[in-house]
Image 1 (tube, rainbow, N blue to C red):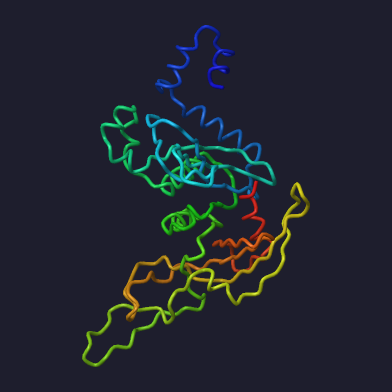
Image 2 (tube, rainbow, N blue to C red; image 1 turned 90 degrees about the horizontal axis):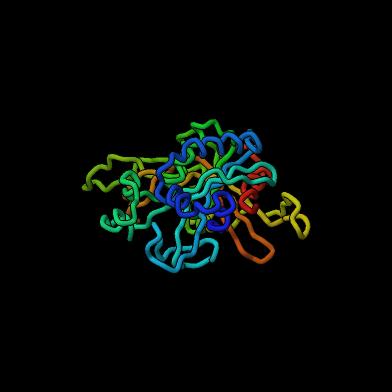
Length: 306
């Protein structure tokens, strides 16, 4: 495809144009800036969302920058591929991708000769996780004035406490997928001084009065109800949902009684469970206000289905 496009645009000069693009002798910043401006003009606004996701490009060789055996979201399995962190601005049912940044796995960042041989710029040779890349790209979008009301991400990003905390620090509302085993606390958890034996050393830190539990266990006794959020190709999309207010378990790790180390309670959030007609269950955390209803929460998370 690249060869066909280049031949249409520069007949007889394919090699020169390929060199111009591949060897990065041009500044992409003005083009990226214009992309952000146009995306914001078309779909930006308070009711828009910014979707963080992975994009995988299957590869057969080993010389393409960042290629390795890693999870390919498009294939639903581990495969030899390149993985890119993507940002998509969406409003209603109209999505526009505004950023793609290549992720370098450890097999690349730990091999300096390989990085140099492949021509990876020095500033990109330091290991960065996907959530770190995503936060950097969010900062770039915000600096460009992109307008959106909420950040959405799947469990690959949602399980990262630093990612969620980074969004909160930036003053952003967010709704993210999480694995079913991610720990949370009841919203009413209290910090108390632990009772110690007379001969024991006095404790210097508070501990929660109840232990954290897995997200799926927290919702085990919750009330589930059917919620419909938009029309799909086969009719209205609907599923069973339950939601409870919780405290995230992403504070500093601390030894609690005889249970070993656990993370202390963090911020309040909504824990949302979703059960589809197939029986599949998914779990989400959302920083939306306590007064938010289930339909609004599902509307935000539903944009991930675009």
